[in-house]
Image (cartoon, rainbow, N blue to C red; front, side, top):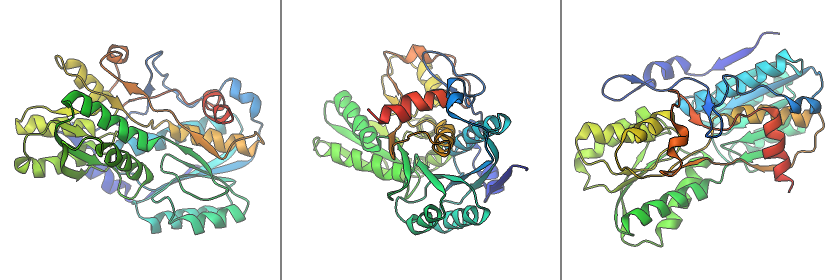
Length: 366
């Protein structure tokens, strides 16, 4: 059976979403992720000890991705694809299907309904909304389909979730900035993919942490959609009207280098920019002199983690319904550990099934 890849508006995304910077630099498109301990291999989806859990099977697994308009999402889909190809080659699945949406609930409802009609065994969902898909997802559950929501999760009993500590990411960003600025300064906030759980969670963390610092002021918010291109465009639009900016708190999903480009292009002083763990930002940071910041973010390799988790569930492995994914942090103290990152990569663990079992599934049982 041939792999089915349905990418709604994909051609539009490829035309409009690949350039960043005034020099026409391409947004990263590679799929390799890297860690400080050991640089990730070219295949972030192969499995070793995790094979003992899996058996040969005729399973079909679907990926319902709400949005395909930034580098992070593209790499997430690549990670899922690589894992699915490895699973298919090993005989653990017979096929997989991928559907990419336009960040609307209606398009994702259509995706899930088509998976139900196709009779897939599991659906991995990166959701457009935490709640608006629930009635459709419930139909999938009622049909006996395993559902794993990851990164942008849903709130529905019976769904396995793989989440990040979004609010803590927002709080950590504010605390770092407040410490560097001694509690006083002007901040620009770059928000993420509209309506998605990561944006809602990070923003909630930012606003909660800001309550402790009355002399920190958010002077501007822009919608960056976790995209370097979009972030640069939106900041450039408002740059002339901004007062002196002391810090930019990003969404931590691929937007930080867009903020860098916008300020470099404007000629204004470079503020503290919270990084997003992309090679582009990390490599830029290494070139700066006495520049201190924090870089953190979710890992697009979680697409592979979702695939392996769904397959582990189908094979009868005991998996808790709620699982947490870790957030790598890069600071001035460990920055040198990430030298030589290839363009288009993120700081990320290597999501083999062995890693998923030990560090995500079994860790959630403790």
